[in-house]
Length: 147
Image (tube, rainbow, N blue to C red; front, side, top):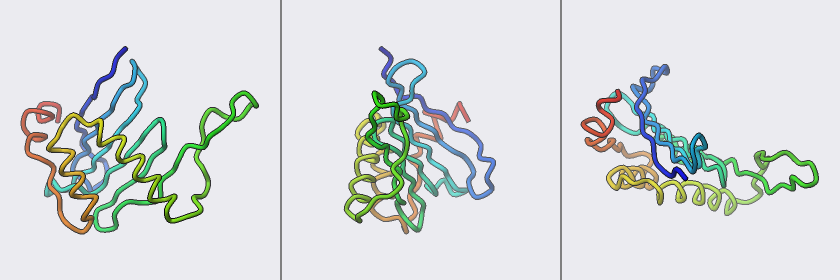
């Protein structure tokens, strides 16, 4: 069984972002259970984050506007021929949106083994209008060589 986080830093093809830090949590070899893509602007600030959970769904956070509508996996019955997974089309209540986002984000943040990064992400989630800089460790030894 292979349970580990992989981390890499890529150059962004979108001008608004200078680079992208991608963290992937493999539940087993070649299967990503959780992922977090962090888009960084020219000042090393968090500009966008995409959260993915194979169990719950995905959501996006944008600087200045905050967290967006989550896409949650539907409960489905594969025995009756329904597809293995698909997104729910509508969340009917504000509470459903909040619960969905919290579920996706928390399952990922609880798994991340980098405490400094987890704290920076939580600061950004609590104050989307504030500028949050990615911790220096990510530009030095942790992913600096991979850039």
